[in-house]
Image (cartoon, rainbow, N blue to C red; front, top):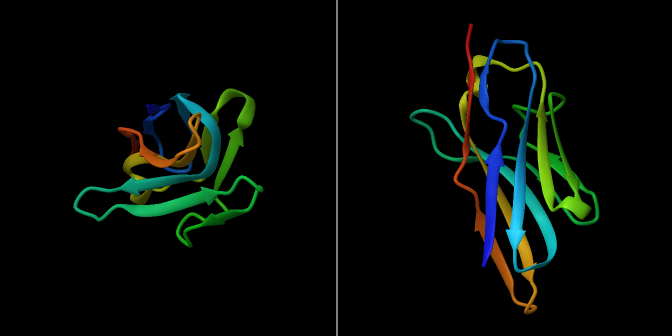
Length: 120
């Protein structure tokens, strides 16, 4: 089994920065595509950023130029650096990862989320 645990969320003022993390553990051979989603109050869950094993990134238009997704393969970690935060960035942020498990089988897993609130 594979577990994803997000951390680093909290309350930040508009214009501020925050870095959230996702730790993957369990029966992992490799982490493949890594993604961050978010779900704001009364909104549908949306894809914010993704990062392939080859290093290619893609971002939602609403966060382009402000957010950066990165990974540490040695630690099985994925990060989302968020700068110039706006109140509309307030959401629960979820980590989502495509994994090759130690037995060779693929799987896609979700974390439980971390709350980010942007408010003065």
